[in-house]
Length: 186
Image (cartoon, rainbow, N blue to C red; front, side, top):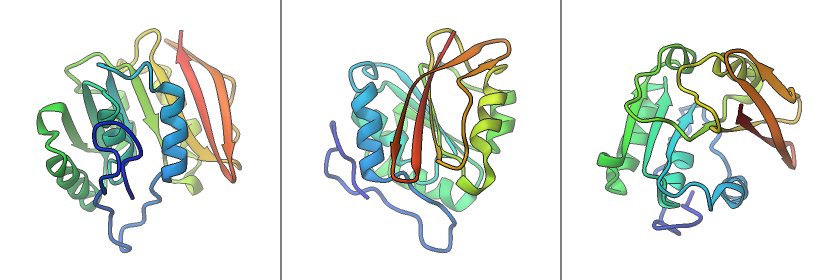
């Protein structure tokens, strides 16, 4: 797996071993996501939920994000994220939370206002909907945050999620059996 664009373009990311059940976001899908947000990511704060190897958050930093938070509950995956952060010398531009995503959303311990939230839960869990349901009431959000949800085509996501905030879908793109849905917080 390689960084597809930006400061670290072409450099390899340390990938988890086969004994860790992770499904990294493909280079093609990562590139497509950043094609959509590339001109808005500069100087912003990015959250990578269900972070796995941290590839998407590191891609955000490579593209010019100011800071990235990584949330992953698997200790082995967190170790990989930390190794990748050191590999790219991003210690002062990132923070890793080894924590359940839903617990993090309920009580985020972030020190900076968030601008982008990316989520890529395990497809078989159908957690994308559940994560968006949790986010609609989270103190993590503010108006105009962009939420990017990667999910299987089998999990259909609603056009809006209403709570303390309204998450409104503004774009959806399919890549084979993978779908990426984009929401803005109102």
